[in-house]
Length: 110
Image (cartoon, rainbow, N blue to C red; front, side, top):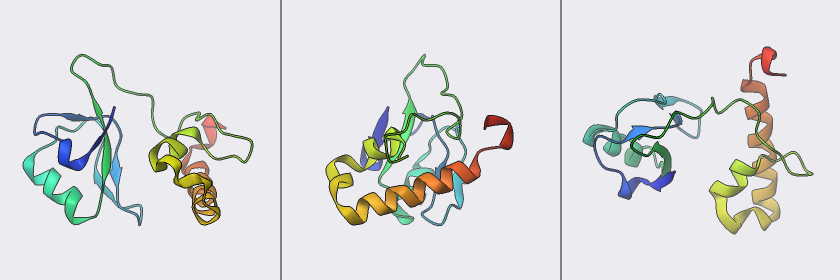
């Protein structure tokens, strides 16, 4: 489940790693969210994060197979930017993000 940072509560568990726009790791997947981590996300301009619901199993690693559209843009990226992906500039940013995700995948994942 993806929540806005303002909706986070201490004790929630991250379902995906949180990274800055420069790809710096802020907090690993599986870590418990604290007041400090919420402040950190806000400081870095993070708007949304993926959290696990109580009793929900952890997701497969982000870098693993992500269904893509005909332009090679993963659906999860489109989900996160809402309707903004219709904009030509946003579409190009999504293509760049998709390339970065592919580069991040270990060779064994194909």
